[in-house]
Image (cartoon, rainbow, N blue to C red; front, side):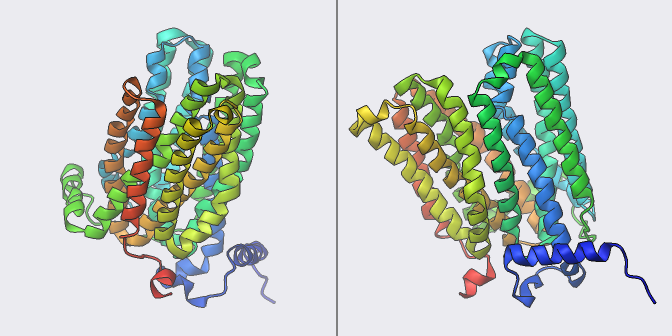
Length: 449
């Protein structure tokens, strides 16, 4: 009698859990991936959730807005280095993606590019931990920024490769839930990180405490790489990766030649308001209440709760229509900003309470989770094969430039109140929602429904 492989019970359990989680009923759901890939979707689905959970949790622990900023303060690094943390982390991973895409396209199996990126990110964060233990002052600031540059470039490798692997291994109407469930799980743990910060446990530990925290974050990226390496990915196309610079220039022509993609990039740029408004809410809280110590932990908790509570909803919604998610989340982000400005000017007594601002921060974070989920799912569904890699690379490179430019909006606080800046960003959100409404549907359910 033939003995069944030991992996069969595991695969059966994964298949059952997958069908329960995504409410799988439609046998035609695998129309846009191969039959072989379809047979291993449940395993690949959960492996990608696990990998993304560990990396998202690592991101929360090594957050440049909180932990890295405090590390630099503890090491007496000049404020100039702190000011560069967020721009380097975000733009550094986006700007070189046209060149990174050529590297990725030469790989028939692209999961190893993600694994490499994760290991490099873990190494970079471990280097930050070493800096925290051995350097001080400007030397520490330069060391952290140098490690962050490596981290950001490695993040670019993961960004391009992950969307392509997702498109090859998980069918349409299921991709948003990969992002949604991993973000929710990471959000739950982020709440715990926020509680630690709120209770002040990190302050007492000093630089040694944060070095240990960063070392733990580095281990999370290694764990994420291990889970991703187990994904069963079929070889894909490898054309078009011969000359990185020439191919990069050629891909930029997509913005002129592909109207739906061009509208998506413009809409995504305008919907950056959901990310850019957040620090101004924090600044407004400081200005109105001066309760920075109380609000800091509450803001981190609010951010984690937003992902925990909203990400699964946005993931399912994005699988039904990522375009509608972009519309509604962008509109919500704009309305949060407008409502907060109205409250500050019309109800100054209420605006003086520190607890008000984390509530608005939470609502904005919910909207931002939707914007992020919608645009990630939309660009994956918009095209297939190498064109998907091109779309991700071109859009991310353009957004990297836009991020640097819109970062200058902060300079407007020298000539106008913070509420005025928030209104400008809210207007961007309204425009982004309007433009998203003019995008074509890319989810088959929404297009035929």
